[in-house]
Length: 105
Image (cartoon, rainbow, N blue to C red; front, side, top):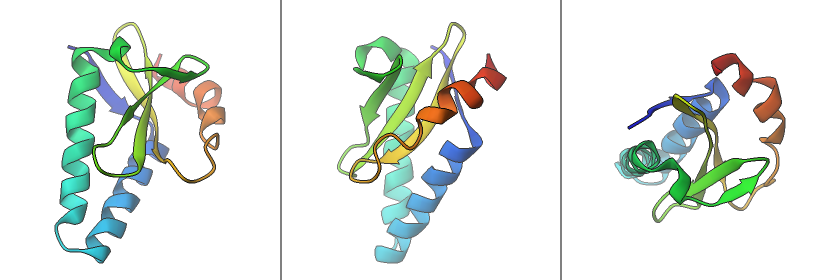
């Protein structure tokens, strides 16, 4: 089981989405965060079981929510690059791979 860490931007995206969902319906943000946790637990156990999307970055979908967890499977840990809404600018996170993920290597 590998440790999962979030880039600061990915953590911010996750928290903003949870706040948005809670404004829509109380408790929905908590459900979103629970699904994120379920996803990160799954990639921690078996990171290569999810498809590569681009530049070696893999994606797991977030249950019933239109989000994907974009992550890099490194030797000793998993780095979450983005918590991405699936219907918005799909490649906005690409620059993070080279600019920021290297901090955690």
